[in-house]
Length: 456
Image (cartoon, rainbow, N blue to C red; front, side):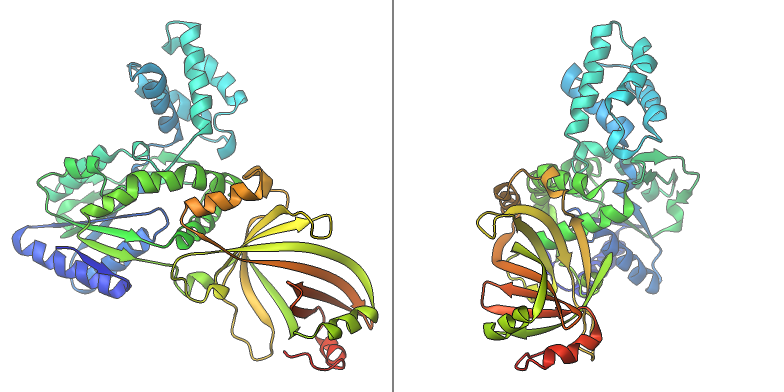
């Protein structure tokens, strides 16, 4: 029997019920929380832990993220497998040397040519010939270019299973510690003992991977899969990585569409079939209120083009920009206007052709009585960055479609900045049918109102 929920409290309560059933027959319960990257697994696990503790159960969370091998292991291990048929015998020693060299190197330069030159000196004693060494170094460079953090080989799942079994036997384990900033394992002196806990909650994208499940064969587990719509997954991933890692948005978004989405579709989503409980966890109201910046404006709307023409005739035109905005939505999305993901393209020939320019997310506006529109904004790719990810608008749209998005609506806009009666205004004309007047200074409101028929 499996259960499916759209409400967090119902999902958590279902797990408590299943845990209580498990504890009727076993001294401890193991809860596995799997799902897509950025689906909210950590948050769900923390809520479940709190709920259990309030019911006097002793619960602990083990994160599979902490079993990440680290870049000093991930890349060399891939090279050993793909270039040497896993025949390099002294990989542990090699990884130690690599870790010392790349530990403090900025993320995007971990395996650059300069670093490889240093590794060439440090690793030459591990190989029988210069040809073998160069083959290894070339492999490091090539595998680094196709790095994918969201595949099973990134994590030591057998090590995680061993620790879970130790806790079930009331033994102690050393808590693993992984830093997303430097992308490496760090030393940890923290110890936890299985005798201190009734419930072991394990969360991570590969908690339902067959390697882990097979390693836990014979262990009674409660298996969860946390899912979200494509828009929630993308927004959470980019926003999270910008705050918690040293990787740029260009790197994150490139890898998201090139590797993370295929990994999710090929290796993570198929594990949903093993789940006892499924929870669909789309972005919450609070999540859509967050942003790095806030836009503030007062604007008026009219459908009467004559009013706009009157303003222009009485103004000094400063600049005119032609834009095309493409919005990305998902199936069954409610109130898309409160959760905008927008690709902006710019035209240099007055709207004949457009070039993709920026990718921006706008969240839910703040509640105001004074008519000001204040809403959070996350600039994912600013002007000059988007072409580092995609070479054309078609490439952008195809990536989003493959990730499960719908394309549209699409709006063509003309943005005119001007000075009217000594005040700065911006006029936005949308598809030549809707017109907005944005006011830079609050006192300008009375000036614009004097033209009449502008509705706030």
